[in-house]
Amino acid sequence: MFKSILAVLLSALLFLAHPALAEQSTKTSSNPVDISTKILGGIQSKSGDWPWMAALLRAGEPDMFLAQYCSGVLIDKSWILTAGHCVQGMKTEDIEVAVGVYDLSNFSGTRTQVKSIHLHPQYNAANLTNDIALIELSQASDQPTIPLFSGESIEDAAPTLAGRMLTAIGWGLADGTSSWYWPEKLRQVDLPVVANSYCNNIYPSPLIASQLCAGWYEGKDVCSGDSGGPVVTRIDNRWTHVGLVSYGAPCKDYFGWYGVYTRTSEFVDFIKSYVPGARFTRKPPLPWMILLIH
Image (cartoon, rainbow, N blue to C red):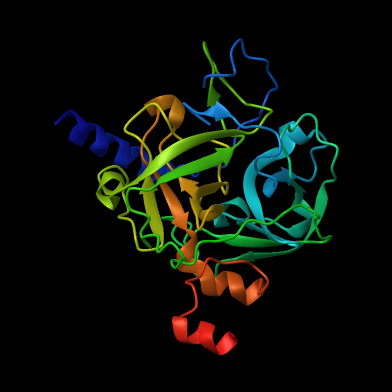
């Protein structure tokens, strides 16, 4: 009963605010007492673990820590995959991208200008469906790229990813020992894929096939500032992009809740239409094809 009443109240709130997790408020740098234990309920990543990670930056802000507002991943040498709401209404001159970032306050790489932005043509800002976009960089990156889940794989992973543990990565609002803070170093949190009904009981719009629900009832979540960032899992023995952060409940108000993520596998055609060089998981060749090859 408590949960159903709270869900109604939260639905009313989200109908008005429907908070995408892009950071909207002004960041302030801080050095929390303890940043090792508490992204929400997560841990600090290790430098070099996620070399394809990209920070989306406000071009007019020279301080990279303050400039970061969304995240994405490098899927080809000149292409970033991110959330649609991270680029909606933005012009190429509004955004710069830093690839291979770990510490926003100590980055020796370059801030790359944007050549073009491609928001999904069916992106719906009202309910954040088809919340996906591609950013073309003006200069190719030398960082590794991440493979994308197509829904098929050598290990025959379930296309729905039901029950699979995912890892979300970002610089979003985090919970320290005594207060919330904006981390300078990349963080990560493990979140299980759960049935859509968990999210449907919370948010005003029911999930569609191109969305997935993941998270815990409380204690662990992505937060404001994590938008567009990847959720990854190991498929075919390598880290693979299976979704990106779309929206969720405000962490500071609800201390974790099930979040909504855009499914990578539902947008294979959209991605390939702009980035034919993107790497996707695929099934192994049939035995008779192997014979033909030999």
